[in-house]
Length: 453
Image (cartoon, rainbow, N blue to C red):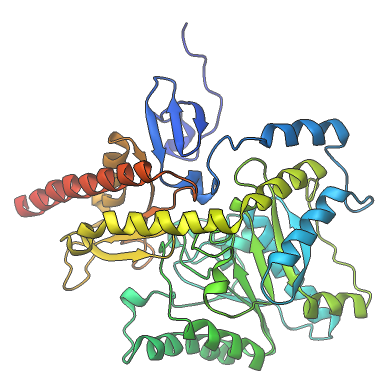
């Protein structure tokens, strides 16, 4: 039978259908194509399926909740499923992040957090505070507010006329820092750029600082010394600026603990969640809000004029409840163990001529590729080294998460590995073998091409 015409408008290649593998079904850490090829999902989709695919019992949740009530507007009704999810998240979140505002995606969660920051200061009579400060080489979402905060040059390109004129500081990127001193001294020096930016813009205008606790798609697994966030917290407190931790990617065991901020011992004023919140089974995200922020709304009887049609719907909330309950200490420990195994089995790449930086934070690994290790010079972007490594790994049966622009927004190639926390030891070995071989194959190709020039 001839394949029917595909009417999807794809984001790559002018919207025309690309030549993509067609997945028939998925289970655990495996994607099985229509041709029967079994691929190891070393990216957990887009760092989403933290528990793997087809988790037993999930179908019963869909069936029972949809038979009960699948949709309600939380503007007018309440229901046990979203209330239970909010209680669970509040009980497992760090510090006093006790209130939960539901949204549908990571972009929406960050948009809501920015609006909450704005309304919080309006409630306090500080109506000039509206600016959000973020970092270059960050990603906070594709909607206009989230993209305004995003520091990923290639994602912003072309949409600048729509973006808000907010501030960006240098990324938390120890591999490319030029500060002197110990790791702690460098971290504090980098963090103090936030203070300089706040003072230059005017403390009376700055409402929030948003950051991914550990680098995600733009600089995967880049993690500063804990002193960085200690300094950030102190600066935000001094200048009355809210600290928003974007845990859309790093939450739910991706870096080892349930939330990446636990690594630093610092509590933000808000924390945005997504991806692993539902493990990919349904769209849902959330903003965790501190008591101090939430109490200001209650004290002044301020309504938050923001929301989305499907936010907090009972079906998605019931699914999220089921997923979040699966993040037990045992699952988190398994994720850390598999991450340690992956790092160990990839150890040979630490000294590879093409790998400038080998980063790992729990079950999250980032490989940064360079043309010269001594100078840290990146490859010519036209070579698309990130894409070549991705293709070579896929040819060897492993799906990974490639990226570019890590150095200056345009140059810089990298690969992220973010497999399900529940994957097997055998699959870890398959990932390591395929990635090592892919890096070596691409290095042979690009080094010969460079020599030929």
